[in-house]
Amino acid sequence: MGSKAFSIYQGDALQLTCSVTNNNGEVLNLTNYDGIHFTVKTNKESPTLIIHKTLGAGITVVSAAKGQLKVTLLNDDSKEIEPGLYYYEIMLEDTSEDLQYVVVQDFMKVIGRVLGYPESVPGNFIVMGNFQVGVDDGLARTAKFFADVTVGSPTNGCSVQVMGDGQYIQVPVMASGNKPGTPGKGMIIFNDTSGKGEMYDGSTWQPMW
Image 1 (cartoon, rainbow, N blue to C red):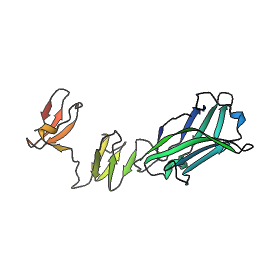
Image 2: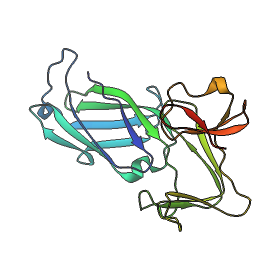
Image 3: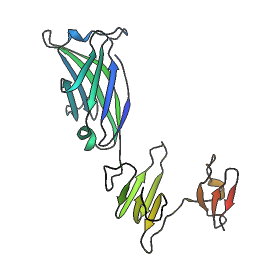
Image 4: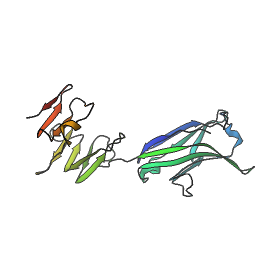
């Protein structure tokens, strides 16, 4: 039995290629099976299938003798799935012998996507109103915007533009002892101890006023 965890963004398409083996690591010849199923569920014991692909309908045999197959996930397959971890498995079926054999099982991670307008142009979206973006870097950090935000083609030539009277961008506020241990050049914080904004210049935190 094999395993192959993977991630997919909401609304993205993906092709998953794998080689199937038995418990001894020996390649299984797919010509011995007349059914192949790829299923996604909230957990292993759940009876509800969130995604179900079958041979000829999302599953293609690449090389039967080498046990290689390809699963194709379409945009609509992941579009409505909530972000999180899901159990998936690939199962071979021999209907003549009434046998079913799970050959791959692992987890599929669905990553949330910030949707804006127009959605179809990567790196160029406009969000009207309030929204927040979760940073998928393993840390519990969230960037919040309370304004109309343009990314990709703002009017003044910069990369990000916040529009509207009375709107603002809030940088992280922290005491001197809580600054990042390994800061990156260009990082900006508000030092609550000194009461000043600071920018890291690559070697030192410099006061901004």
